[in-house]
Image 1 (cartoon, rainbow, N blue to C red):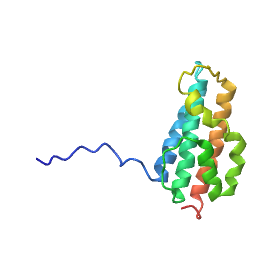
Image 2: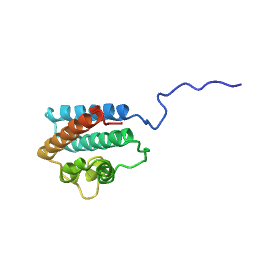
Image 3: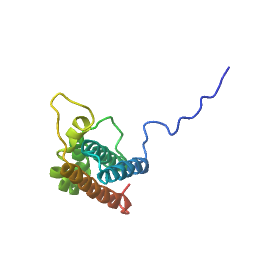
Length: 144
């Protein structure tokens, strides 16, 4: 008997820049929402910003023909972006803390790391700046 399996959505991994950018926009929107809360969601906001930044960089790279690979390293992704377009160097300093958000802001660790509301605010600002930068790059006629 040859039964067709139900579709679970798009083929994984998603290889379209648009999908990565849309997911990044959603992560960033949720992080912005978290800033408005009365609860201290600083760690979660930093994590969501890391996720948004990772997806913006991957979306940009995929638009340039990069083959998706599993990595969460913002430093590695940024280096790849710089190898394509040197103007990404303007983010080197601002994105430096984002690699530790992927674990330290997501899981309880032995050496507890405190994330301040100011750090969360800064993470959102940096992610928003990268968002605008990548959106502009991908909208230019020379993108893709």
